[in-house]
Image (cartoon, rainbow, N blue to C red; front, top):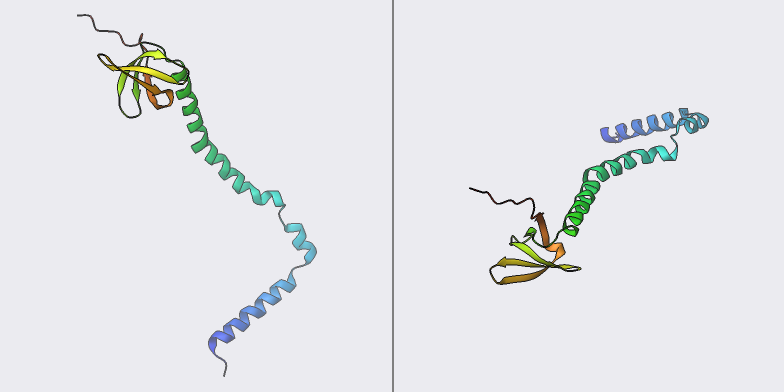
Length: 126
Protein backbone atom coordinates (compact mmCIF):
# COMPACT_ATOMS: atom_id res chain seq x y z
CA UNK A 1 0.00 0.00 0.00
CA UNK A 2 1.47 3.34 -1.01
CA UNK A 3 1.98 5.99 1.63
CA UNK A 4 0.00 9.20 1.79
CA UNK A 5 2.99 11.38 0.92
CA UNK A 6 3.75 9.44 -2.27
CA UNK A 7 0.08 9.69 -3.27
CA UNK A 8 0.07 13.48 -2.75
CA UNK A 9 3.34 13.81 -4.66
CA UNK A 10 1.92 11.84 -7.59
CA UNK A 11 -1.22 13.99 -7.66
CA UNK A 12 0.82 17.21 -7.66
CA UNK A 13 3.05 15.89 -10.44
CA UNK A 14 0.03 14.94 -12.56
CA UNK A 15 -1.57 18.33 -12.02
CA UNK A 16 1.66 20.11 -12.96
CA UNK A 17 2.09 18.07 -16.13
CA UNK A 18 -1.54 18.64 -17.12
CA UNK A 19 -1.25 22.38 -16.52
CA UNK A 20 1.99 22.60 -18.48
CA UNK A 21 0.48 20.80 -21.45
CA UNK A 22 -2.58 23.03 -21.46
CA UNK A 23 -0.62 26.20 -22.23
CA UNK A 24 -0.30 27.03 -25.89
CA UNK A 25 3.37 27.94 -26.69
CA UNK A 26 2.20 30.81 -28.91
CA UNK A 27 0.17 32.31 -26.04
CA UNK A 28 3.10 31.89 -23.64
CA UNK A 29 5.43 33.87 -25.91
CA UNK A 30 2.84 36.62 -26.29
CA UNK A 31 2.40 37.06 -22.53
CA UNK A 32 6.13 37.09 -21.73
CA UNK A 33 7.49 40.47 -20.58
CA UNK A 34 10.30 42.18 -22.47
CA UNK A 35 13.76 41.88 -20.93
CA UNK A 36 14.03 45.57 -20.04
CA UNK A 37 10.85 45.34 -17.94
CA UNK A 38 12.67 43.03 -15.53
CA UNK A 39 15.29 45.74 -14.95
CA UNK A 40 12.82 48.49 -13.98
CA UNK A 41 12.71 47.68 -10.23
CA UNK A 42 16.50 47.66 -10.04
CA UNK A 43 16.75 50.97 -11.89
CA UNK A 44 14.17 52.49 -9.56
CA UNK A 45 16.09 51.23 -6.53
CA UNK A 46 19.33 52.69 -7.90
CA UNK A 47 17.60 56.06 -8.45
CA UNK A 48 16.26 56.13 -4.90
CA UNK A 49 19.70 55.21 -3.51
CA UNK A 50 21.30 58.00 -5.55
CA UNK A 51 18.92 60.69 -4.29
CA UNK A 52 18.93 59.48 -0.67
CA UNK A 53 22.61 58.66 -0.15
CA UNK A 54 25.02 59.71 -2.90
CA UNK A 55 23.74 63.14 -3.96
CA UNK A 56 23.41 64.67 -0.46
CA UNK A 57 26.96 63.62 0.39
CA UNK A 58 28.36 65.10 -2.81
CA UNK A 59 26.47 68.37 -2.26
CA UNK A 60 27.77 68.61 1.32
CA UNK A 61 31.34 67.84 0.18
CA UNK A 62 31.12 70.54 -2.50
CA UNK A 63 29.84 73.10 0.03
CA UNK A 64 32.61 72.16 2.50
CA UNK A 65 35.25 72.50 -0.23
CA UNK A 66 33.94 75.96 -1.20
CA UNK A 67 33.90 77.07 2.44
CA UNK A 68 37.46 75.93 3.07
CA UNK A 69 38.63 77.34 -0.26
CA UNK A 70 37.24 80.75 0.65
CA UNK A 71 38.87 80.89 4.08
CA UNK A 72 41.29 83.75 4.59
CA UNK A 73 43.53 85.24 7.25
CA UNK A 74 41.58 86.27 10.35
CA UNK A 75 38.78 83.71 9.98
CA UNK A 76 37.97 81.52 12.96
CA UNK A 77 38.14 77.78 12.34
CA UNK A 78 37.12 74.63 14.16
CA UNK A 79 39.03 71.50 13.16
CA UNK A 80 37.66 67.97 13.12
CA UNK A 81 39.59 67.13 16.30
CA UNK A 82 37.92 70.02 18.16
CA UNK A 83 40.74 72.57 18.18
CA UNK A 84 39.56 76.16 17.77
CA UNK A 85 41.79 78.82 16.31
CA UNK A 86 42.26 81.80 14.01
CA UNK A 87 43.89 81.51 10.60
CA UNK A 88 47.11 83.51 10.51
CA UNK A 89 48.41 82.35 7.11
CA UNK A 90 46.92 80.55 4.11
CA UNK A 91 49.07 78.27 1.95
CA UNK A 92 48.23 75.98 -0.99
CA UNK A 93 47.18 72.92 0.99
CA UNK A 94 47.61 74.08 4.59
CA UNK A 95 46.62 76.77 7.07
CA UNK A 96 48.77 78.22 9.83
CA UNK A 97 46.37 78.48 12.75
CA UNK A 98 46.91 80.49 15.92
CA UNK A 99 45.43 78.51 18.80
CA UNK A 100 46.85 80.53 21.74
CA UNK A 101 49.21 83.44 22.40
CA UNK A 102 52.52 82.67 20.65
CA UNK A 103 51.26 79.18 19.62
CA UNK A 104 50.75 78.53 15.93
CA UNK A 105 50.28 75.18 14.23
CA UNK A 106 50.22 74.25 10.57
CA UNK A 107 47.28 72.03 9.61
CA UNK A 108 45.99 70.51 6.39
CA UNK A 109 42.94 72.18 4.90
CA UNK A 110 41.13 68.85 4.91
CA UNK A 111 40.98 68.73 8.74
CA UNK A 112 39.10 72.03 9.00
CA UNK A 113 35.47 71.34 9.83
CA UNK A 114 33.89 74.80 10.15
CA UNK A 115 34.94 78.29 9.12
CA UNK A 116 33.46 81.43 10.69
CA UNK A 117 34.16 84.59 8.76
CA UNK A 118 36.02 87.35 10.60
CA UNK A 119 33.44 89.92 9.49
CA UNK A 120 30.58 87.78 10.87
CA UNK A 121 32.03 87.86 14.40
CA UNK A 122 31.50 91.35 15.75
CA UNK A 123 32.53 92.25 19.28
CA UNK A 124 29.70 93.43 21.51
CA UNK A 125 30.09 97.08 22.47
CA UNK A 126 28.97 97.99 25.94
